[in-house]
Length: 400
Image 1 (tube, rainbow, N blue to C red):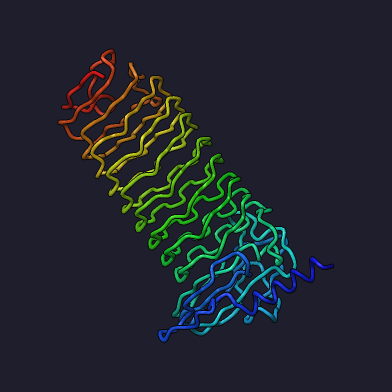
Image 2 (cartoon, one colour):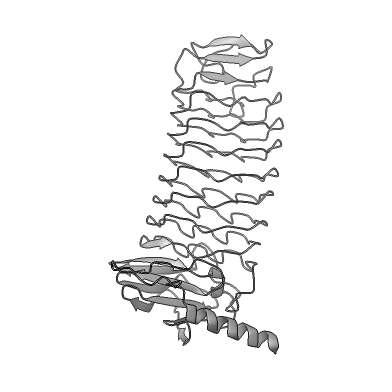
C-alpha cells in the first residue's frame, strides 16, 4: 500500500511541475521556453503556436489500447479510438500542452506494418514532445522493457511539425519496436537518447528516415547487434554532419545496412572495430555520402557474403580507400564497394588471387567510375588484371 501511495504522490508532484515550463516561464515570442525532456513524466505535447493533436488507427487493431489525456496533468479523460479513423485529442493554443498515458496498462500499441497507431499534428504551429513514451504502455512509468513487437511502429511518421522527440528510456527492445517511428519528421532537429543495450531485429529500422533537419544523432551504446537493427536508421538525414560512435564488435546480418544512406553532409565516418563480419553487415552503409572525405579503418580479416556491398558507392569526396587486410575473400564481399568514387587515388589490398567474374565475384564492378592515374598496392603474387572488376584501368600497381 505504501508503494502505491508513493507512486500517486510522485505523479501528483510531477503533474504540478508540468511538462512544459520547467520553472522558466514563457518568452514574449510565445511557446514553451524550458521544456523538461526526461523520463519521469507522461508523454506530453507542448504547443508552439496553434496545433491540433489527433490519433489515427491505420488499418484494424484486434484490441484497441485504452488511453487517457489531460490538459493539466491532474484531471484525466478517456480517448475513444476507432479502427480506421482519426480521433481529435486536443486543440492547443500557443504555450498549451496535453499529456497522454495508458488508462492502466497496454500490452501493445501497434500490431504490424499495415495496422498501427499514428499521431497526426495539424495547425499553423509546431510541437515539442517531452516526457516518457512508455506512459502509453504503463502509466506508472516503471517498465524499461518494450513488451511487444512493433510497439511504436510509425508512431510519429510524417509529423512534419514535430520539433523535439519524447524520452525513449527502454533498455530492452523488441522486434521493429521503433521502426519508422519519426520517418518524414522533417522539422525534428535532435534525436532522443537511445540507451538500450539489448536490441532486437529491425528495432531502429528507418527510425529517422528523411529527418532532413536532424543535426545530432543519439549515442548507440549496444555492443551486440541484432539482424537489421540499424537498417536505414538515418537514411536521407541530409543535415547530419557527425555519426554516432558504433562500438559493437558482435555484428548480425545486415545490421548497418543503409544506416547513413544519402547523408550528404556527413563528413566523417565512425570507427568500425569488428574483426569478424556478418552477411551484408555494411551493405550501402555510406552510399551517397558525398561529403565523406575519410573512410573508417576496416580491420576485419574474416569476411562474409555481401559484407561491404556498395558500402561507399557514390562517395565522391573520398580520395583514399581504406586498407583491406583480408587475405581470403567471400562471395560479393567487395562488390561495387567504390562504385563511382570519382576521386579515389589509392587502394591497398592483401588478397593474392582474384575470384571468378560471375555474379559471386568478390570484386565485381567495385571500381566503376574511378578515373585513371591512381596507385593500387597489393601482394606481388596478385595477377596484373585491369578493368572495373580488377585493378582500375590506367592505375599503377605496386607491391606491398
